[in-house]
Amino acid sequence: MNKSELVAAVAAKAGISKVDAKKAVDAFVATVGETLKKGDKVALVGFGTFSVAKRAARQGINPATKAKITIPAKKSAKFKAGAELNGAL
Image (cartoon, rainbow, N blue to C red; front, top):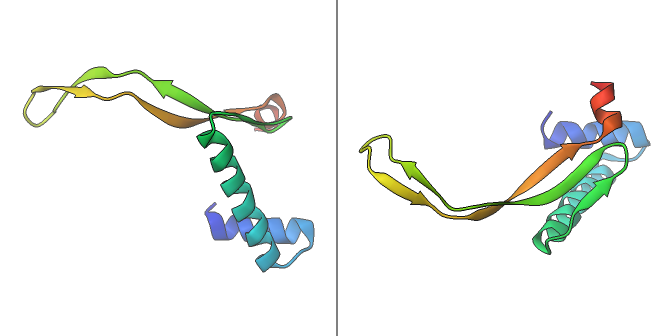
């Protein structure tokens, strides 16, 4: 499912226009992104938790040249599904 399909599904389930559903989806995505940038997490009971994972720097190998390279540390977004969501699958 892509974003436009999600907007259409939200509009149909909530009984609202696609324009309003797009605003809601965009607001949700923006709010989660802003919260993760601050280093906080977003927990939706029954659905799951969005959080920030820190990955340490590590050594890697360039597959083309076989030379060792250093892969820098970084932060990435992480999602852990809740029990109800896992149970529904």
